Image (cartoon, rainbow, N blue to C red; front, side, top):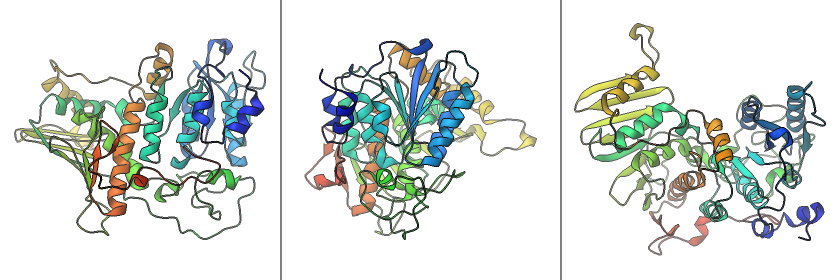
Length: 444
């Protein structure tokens, strides 16, 4: 093929990266010990949690970790080495990299797990797909609408498996809530309310002394050049999630953080996984940080509003759901309810969900994708080559919902959208709003 590891690394920073490699080029011919071999990119708080989760599965073997921060990178490598200590036949069980391109170039890695800041999701996702690897990527899957479309296009061959970290679809309370809605248990759906944080803001953080061992230039990557600040990339080994999410250069605000979870469930409950809204409408006040709405072709609206979590309103009832919370009302009667733990009630979210399921869904015509464990579902699909519960279609289109809302807040203008063509409609929006400026040499 004429490709070497060096030529791959030299070319991988260019705009044509997703197109230059055939999917089979770097694929491993055999899997060591018959296991699925994993590489990790991004080892912050969330990446560290995912690493622990992946290590717990015997079917998987972590071969490499990558982070631009030396402290986090070496801590992750040490964790993997200690985990595999004493296992027969394990030579050099984990390598550590500063540059994700070196990890992706390895032939023996089958799947890449990406838990970087949002602005660094799509470029390594596309690189991994082009190198013939399956991908697990944190939500929101992308940082822009254009990036969602790029990933959808890259996945058209159907050869790769991609799972987005929208794990609420693997929690029973959310599935049952959506099945109730889809099977008409609340009548005709009129509207939905979703509770999450505000849109992102421009980064205005002051300069701080650079953290030793951090490749700040590579942390920024495609984002604009600016001085280091520990708020976006904490020093040492952070215990809490960093705040890069709130800044538009690196994240998607609360809209792309919790909104990616809640809007994903709204899409599921409305049966819009393969489609999406036709418009995003800003709130009345340009200063408002909530109140924007997604509008669907059937007239249903999904409003960004403080509340329960995900709240479906219908002509005959209401379903409210959040993590370990569930309320179902039908024709003025509460069928199931669990909002807070109360020992005097002697019930649980699991019990209340089961009560609603038994009463209304035993003979349901619509049964949704049933995943009881998000990583187990991904592993099973890597083996069977079937679509996982939060495939690229789910992840990309739910991310687009987030981006449309953010654009409505940013420009305080109604955004018309064609979900079939994945394009702005009505010639009312600037095409530049679908993408962002990438700092050279990075691009999508």
